[in-house]
Image (cartoon, rainbow, N blue to C red; front, top):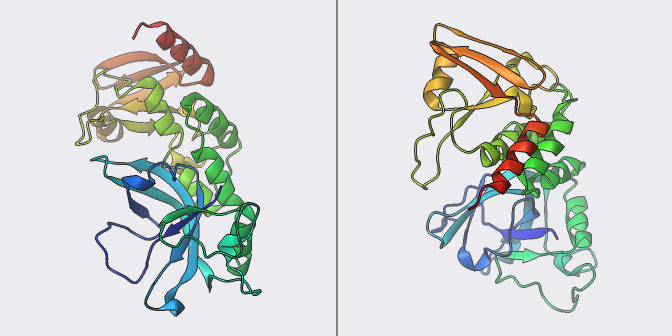
Length: 289
């Protein structure tokens, strides 16, 4: 179901919020919000009723926590409304009380910073804000809600195989080029090791390993399918820098393998195709934990 996220845009607080970019919330809400949720921003103000309204929308992206107490949700496609929307519909009923299972006689639970609303309520608020097209938001939501990496890569590869750089919606294209996309899904399957030298990426402060993605056909060439997984390899920062700035780098390929020469290194690796990644996952499943 869609969410309401309460976040004041004209008030300093102890939360490290960045409207339309990052949403900071305590652990008591950790089970109420997940990647892929579509939301509407609400600004509350107990002292000034005229300062209470709905003012924007977006999709919840990656969620992280360093201490298990504070959580940070990336906001994808965060967009201000063309027009702020008051809390009540023209019939004096609260927008948030529209839809099945909602009691129009009661006030919404303003005390909860994160709360569910019906699809009817969501659509009414969007309409009142004069938002013309939210299909791109649903595109992002459908991608973000896929947690299984191989399924995610398969879905994105189908999108990328006919990717039109000039015509693709700006919100969607910005998300698909970063965030929870093919690159991060590949990292989950392949691990944090460089596909050229084999070394693991360095350890980050949060305990995970850092690894970078390289597109063999550069995105700047704007060729179809250049964002697909078989055009991507995972690299340590040293090999990645050498590819871009070193004296010698070349690569060739057949149907299943890549052949790479980088400085004095000569390697052949499996392409990151769906078939090869599926075989890798099957092998990993056979290894005793």
